[in-house]
Structures are given as structure tokens and as C-alpha cells.
Length: 242
Ligand code: SF4
Image 1 (cartoon, rainbow, N blue to C red):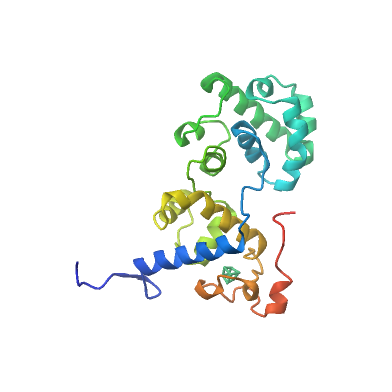
Image 2: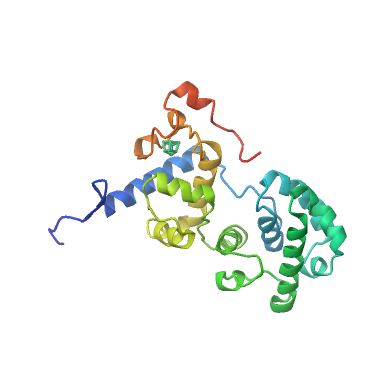
């Protein structure tokens, strides 16, 4: 073993220190949110792919509300690819951007039928080639519908890893790789849920509930929101996005 001191990477913290602190934070978040999971309802990979695409610019709750009608009308890619545009627009209407969302679903389901026999492919490289599907959506589908570990860098995940001082990067693909190196692959999907739940419930973009935060002790951004326990407790949400 080398006697050379380990390189200090930032704020006096070594790489080993960073890995330990990151995993400690994840363990505490896992205890805080034992039921953390994908907040979009789905029965199969096709449904998860579609509802994830639909969840852009709206809430999971709204998407969950249109899901039964949507999949009763179009249970698979073949049915959705053949959908009457106006009928589909009417169903996704409550989610906003209904024309663009309808167009996305029609193109996505047509591509599934054309290239994958109507099935959702369980590979990142194939998923990101589908129209309207980026790495974030692909990782949601891989992690939650196929059990293949994936890191979902959404707005919450990006904000939290920077507040935690796990990385200073902002590009989502770079963030995904940098954070992936701090954790065993098997933990990636649940890590994503823990951070997204914490971001939705306590570590808000504005006014994070620092005084009611279970990982405050290990967070360099402590103090970005109120540290008074009573004021902070009022900021804690018991549910995700309304
Ligand atoms: S201490 Fe504040 S900034 Fe840090 S994770 Fe907790 S709520 Fe977020």
C-alpha cells in the first residue's frame, strides 16, 4: 500500500471521504424515505415509457389521472400508433401541450412498431434512438420496468448532487457518469428515487427545509434554506409534486 497522502479534491475532502459521505447521505435518505419509488403508475414497460414522456412539463399526479383512460383506449404500441389524433389529443388534453404530446406518442409508438415489433427495447442505446426519448426517460424505464440499474438526472437530482458537493458539473450526462462512480451500480435506481423524493419533499429549489433535513450534518449547502426547525418544518411536503 502506498504511504502517499490521498489527493484532496475539494473543501479539504479526499476522494475516499467523498465516497463515504455520499453513501452515508444515501443510507440516511433510504431510512427517511423507505417507500421511495417511481411516482408514475404503470403496469408494463410500454406504459412507463409513455407516461414518462407525458410527465414533461406537468405533474406525476395529473399523468396518473389520465393513465387509465389512455391505456384502456390504447393498450399497446400498435393500438397507439393507429390512434385517431383528435381522440388522443382529447385524452392527453388535461396535461397541457396536448398537440406536441400527441405527436410524440404517435411517433414513439410508430417507431416501436416499426423497429421493435411493438415492444420496448431493454437497452439504453435502443431507447435513446426512439423519438422524444432522452437518457433521463431511458434510465427511468430501464431502472423501473426492467430492473436494470440507471441514474435519472432530473432537475431535483442535479440540484441535490451539486448542493451535496458530490459534483460541480451541470451537464446531465456528465453528472450521470460522475455520480455513477461514487456508488455501486446496483444502487443507482434507488439512489435516484431517494434524491428525487428528498428534492420534492424537503430540498426544494427555493427555500429548502434545512432545519428539518436528516442529512444536514453532511451537506455543505446547509443554511441555504431556513435552519430554524419550526420554520423549516412548515416547508416539508408529505407528498411529491401536487
Ligand atoms: S441541508 Fe438544506 S440544502 Fe442540504 S440537503 Fe438538506 S435541505 Fe437540502
